[in-house]
Length: 263
Image (tube, rainbow, N blue to C red; front, side, top):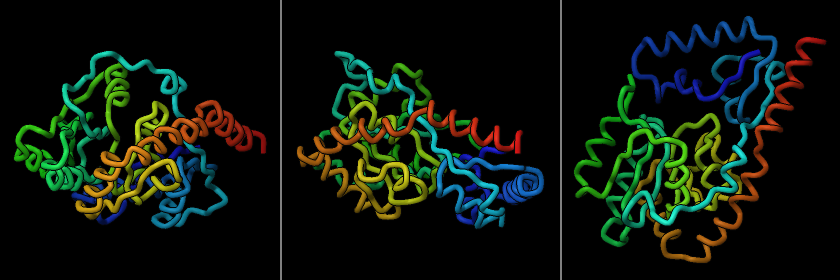
């Protein structure tokens, strides 16, 4: 049994940077196609991409969504915010398919109209394919784009709790946990209308065109300025995120394993 999460972007032409990655993807998926009795994908999007790039039979593949830790629904907001100004949050690694360059460009468009900073939480160094263009663009915006680097889980949760919104403009996600974690603690979410994100977030998020910084900027202003939109997202988020549990994920995974063993 093989679980496919987010490595499919290695095989996609728009994300391949170097022949070694393309060769790695070809070898990996050839082995999966020949040897796996059953394949678990974390989204229907991943399932469809796997079929497209490898030709693996639909009968071999089962979709099982990931879950959200129960602790995300009962977090207590600290009296002191981890950042000393209102802020827009992004959580994730600084890699090209995460599309941070366009988020930073969008922030640059509206920074004069809002009091918020843009806080980017996640690892930004040590990648073979890091996003240097995003780092360079951020350095030109008067200290209002901040990179925290990796933070521990407790601090990460406080960043979510104190943020005015999470913006997640990724071009490619096999699943996408940060939007669900934000929803679980009542943080409004803006995500791209790409890859698995519409499947995972459904009507509990605002959607933006990830290739259009102006559209991203407009959606951020919508959440900043419209209290009704913000409150609707805060209300919908936890209920939607509760649909994704690790208990259900484990039960469905066990069912696949038992089927392989006993059939």
